[in-house]
Amino acid sequence: MLCDVQALTGESPDSSAVLWKLAESGRQLDANLIRLPAGEHIATHAEPDLDVLVLVVTGDGVMNTPAEPLPLTAGVLLWLPHGSTRSITAGPGGLAYVTVHRRRPGMQIRRRSDPTP
Image (tube, rainbow, N blue to C red; front, side, top):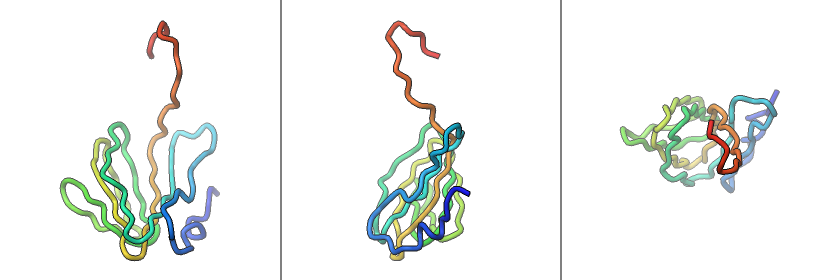
């Protein structure tokens, strides 16, 4: 068991926060549980290299995409193909959601003479 999502999201949100993050060593995925209070906004952004799954846990809001605004309510599961542009705004009850994507490789510092992989 990694966490109890209901317990972590049970309190009224008063600030945006990462409530949980997958941090186990050797993992191939990254995952986060994000909380946004009512009316909070995540600016337009895109993940150029990775597909992302978004699962709404509690609350409501809107994900704005170039195609259309998508209503977010508890239980909604979205797949965002790599390159997808979106922004998120929490509704009056706030919003909590889980994101999951393939883990990014860690940064590697090399000397200039080292060949790139």
